[in-house]
Image (cartoon, rainbow, N blue to C red; front, side, top):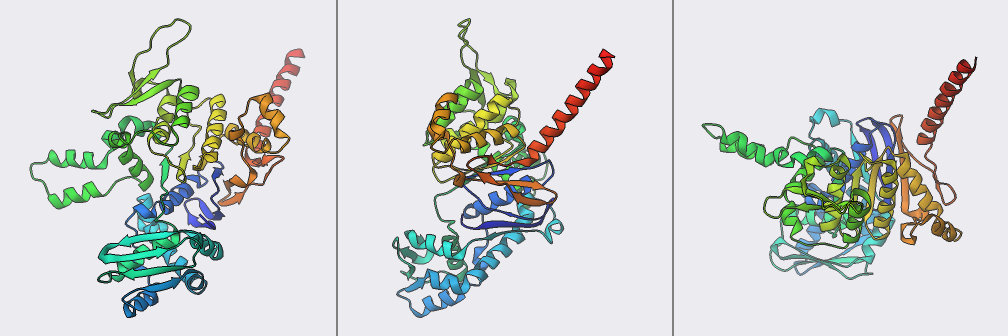
Length: 453
């Protein structure tokens, strides 16, 4: 993810930009646009899974024509082409993203007439990254894209008939954007507690089928339309579908991030989750209490605390699905969690980042930000003694270069200053805390003086 993402007139955000680091924080007051930015980033990162019409790009016409003249193959120089056509290529991609914003948020087109979410990669860095990579991709109609690692050129080979231009352009665009890589984005929404309880009822396909089944006369075209179109924003719809697919996901077995899923069970919820293989029901069993030795009972998720409900999705994702290079996005990880556990969540996020998972977080939690500050400040050579004193693990420490933090406020996006000495200089929390302390002190001492008098 080289370069920056730009926003203009999107929700509450008038203008702003951000870059994605191994861990990226969106901070700020309510209704400041953090979720708008997160959903838009999620959409871009999931372009490889969406029917995005990259085939409508016209910038590849010359390459396609050259391939037509050389049926045996055509060699495409990356750096030279990006230098000449890269700006046009990115502009056309951003036009497609703009056109699809209404579908992302599932809102009327008129709301996004002047809204933009665009990607602005550094073209020299993009060319360098593409040069490093090996490419060996086949598409329909016997078309192949091949490139050796370290080489500047991609070879296009039409083994049989040439594919239609739309297929060619779609595949080529995805290769240049890096969308063909094994990298997935997964978003845990702020509405997760309700979704964990009612995901079956909220399933668009299930609801549509039940609704139409109750009618005397079924209109097949109307039924298909209702089944295909979700009433929710895309990240919410994807999360509901994911919850309804847990039984098949669970069959894959545990993955690279199983130890961190275990950490959530042991240190944050003190119990174990189960997704029933036959029914898909979610249950929870608290760990046995040492004091009285009594065994605990399995219970439905609806009977558990809000913390247990809130952390289920994160646990299941880490247990069964997460892989290195993926992007985990969490909207308000602090929801329903005690300050002590918010600090633990911050340390879990640091562990995930250092283990190879990218993390994007939208948060209101001063506890999470301050804990991440500590992990940054402990990264220096002098931090070893302090790590031992306060029982921090070495793999929890974060280097300054791995983290980016942004303040969403006053209709704009402002990057926080981050230094090894101070961590994230998050003034938005400090101002509120200072104001709270000043008011609290004034009330307390005013009452004391009154009582003494």
